[in-house]
Length: 262
Image (cartoon, rainbow, N blue to C red; front, side, top):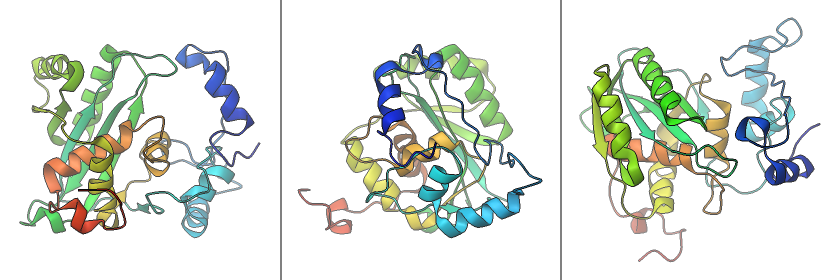
């Protein structure tokens, strides 16, 4: 069935009873037109070039509903349709891990963002930002260690930042001891919603997403608002941009449409 909203009949059943992989009751069969590796489901009928053209024409929201079986509610969102473009050569890559420690149906996800930037541009606030890898996992932390290490090595990450609030220090130490990555601690502070709005909306016109990032990761960003059930992907990406490429400045001055900021 075509799912037009997150909390349609299917969404309500899944929210109530959960998926099998998360310890719930339901097994969900999805046959997206484009898989997580960027390959067409039925290339003889719908080649990847044709699907990408359709995606560009109708936008991410309709494409996810009609072709990917992933609803993104058709309503006003903080973020417009993302720009899908592969990164050029010569970028330096950084990663940000926002770890989670439980795996139940209502638990947070571990989120990893890998962003490329041209370090030859002295003013990083003007550099284009390429999200080469993005993924969210609801897996045991030991499994997440391996997944993060593999992704960072494959994407030549120069520094991996690990959010160390709420037990993240242990994750930092575990990854540091592997000696395969340069790992640095980061402590989040301030209002999370303002951080996401400030860093993502404020930089949206210079952010480019690879077509190979996880659909679930991108979906979580596109459907984000301050009432969203999960914000792990947008917070991971916002925190990384703040760390390596922030424009800075007053959010009050930059977002006069966002009422109530003093």
